[in-house]
Image (cartoon, rainbow, N blue to C red; front, side, top):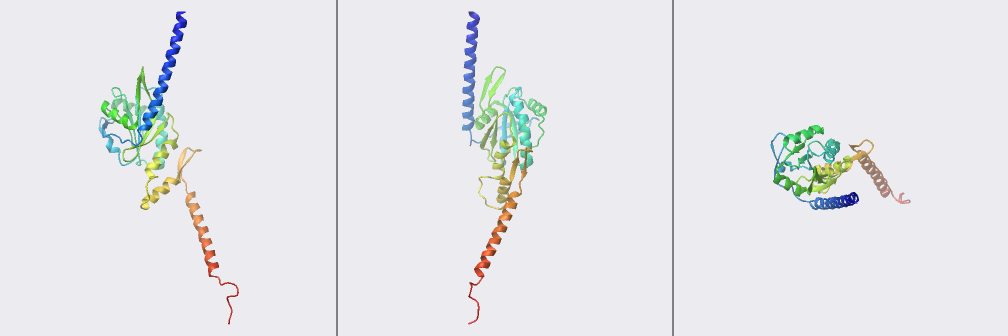
Length: 265
């Protein structure tokens, strides 16, 4: 009887735990989405060499922000390893200097600059403009609020959303990308919007060039790579040629005298 009662109590406790976990996930998602449009705080983080890194120093170009903890054995390492090829492809398609990436350790007591350096090395992250950063508690709290990142302590670790926060050049949260595995388009497409200015009015020649790059930089799912599609220019050229031929014919017909209009009086 006691064994049966223990089994029932265990089942109930597991059911409650799962319900609580689901409630946390839903609340974390609401918190994450509610942060869209929020600016990053003016705080200072620390790189793997112990140097101060002001968050304001990333303004001027888009920024990818991920928060992880170094003692995580599953989701965080998987997320970094999956993000690597997506960031690499984004740099190839948009330019190495067109955006930055930061990975911030949120377990402030354990995620020291040395631990963050080891994490980057263990996961093979060697791309330019991707920094692994540590934070004190106040700075971490401010960053987490700005990007809508909810953290829940549990025995042996933390529960949190696997998310990449896409920040625009003015330091405001533009979009959230969720999941531990990322196909290149889910990372590259929002960066394309920001790098090439999808919603920016066309005011000069550079804006025209950026708009062309925006629409002509396309993803090939077969190769998993982005490339510049020249077919748009071919289509425009053919269209202009056809229009020119049509106009030429119309002008000739308009200038041609009507039948019987020629002759001598």
